[in-house]
Amino acid sequence: MGQTRRNRRIYFGWWLVAGLFIVLTISSGMGFYNLSVYINVLSQAHGFAVSEVSGAVSLFFLVGGIGGMWVARLFERMDVRLVMTGGAALGGLALALIGGVRESWQLYVLFALFGIGNSGVSIVTSTTLVTRWFPGPDRSVALSVASTGLSFGGVVLTPVSAAWLNTAGVETTMPWLGFLFFAAITPIAWLLVRWEPTERTIEGAVPLPSGPVWYYRDAIRTPFFLVVSLGFVLCMCAQVGGIAHLYNQAQMIAGDVTAARAVQILSVMSIVMRIAGGWIVRRMSLRHFALVNSLVQGAGVLIIALADSATTVLVGAAVFGSSVGNLLMLHPLMLAEVFGTFDYARIFSLSNAITVLGVGSGPFMLGLVYDFSSYQVAFGVAAILCLGSFLLMALARVPEVSSQ
Image (tube, rainbow, N blue to C red):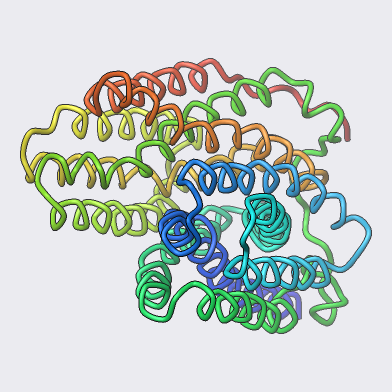
């Protein structure tokens, strides 16, 4: 009987992972990866300066990071499916209205609302659910599969939405994107998502042990939390900045075709190596794997910085891409391994909000360095940031459990 209950939990858990994969595909495809498309079409269609739309995009990241902390608190008060439905509704409404904006203040308000809505269906929600459902060695595999949706959205949805926006126009397309954002996420939330494998979801099952018991107030005061969070600030600054400027650097070196291929290769390598990484960390410590990937990312952006041919820039994109998905996955895994699942949502949401400093500043920083020097120097700076991330994570030491 006990084995049957366990099998039911595992069966439903993997359906949950499949649902989160789709949710993250939609969230990242219409959010993160589509942002560069929105910058382009909104500046052309309504005459906004690129800097105005870029500022709204930065606000999306900032508000989304802070919104993740609010979402984590909501998990303590209401059904996670209600949180996801509310996020999908708010995000979808904001997307639908963006196509009709005429003033810059409207643009900023709607991108801020989109950031809040998206935070309810994105990384904080998905990683919290996976850590609760998979307390054992399968956690890394489950998280690698679910979080692959982040990259898959860029591969599948972004090209489609870009073609749709360029063909039908902003005012026609954005309401449909908003509707699809809500209509695709909501049924998945209600059909496949449950907070944890308890008797309310699977008959006879009981909550599973979740490792060490760390309270939020104690976890965030540890040197480990601070050092890892700052390490990922530098890591995400280099990563998001490098991704944002990869197309332009590749275009200058070898033209449009190579630039498009470089972005595709980066996305595909991110997907392939993220899946592989989920299995690798079952045999290798998370910290050591994070150190390896920090160096791999640094090597990738350095190759891109020094590239002088199509072949070299494509090799750099492949090396860079092989680290992207794994580093995104390792951040929640490292925190869950050390601090357990008791207050995980709040602990990770704060660390994720801190890393938004890197996510938001990366594209601006590399663009600023390029304006004053060159892309060679800009990507060289990104490589130095990766080295800094490596050194910080090398200093991270696991603290003793504070409470039982």
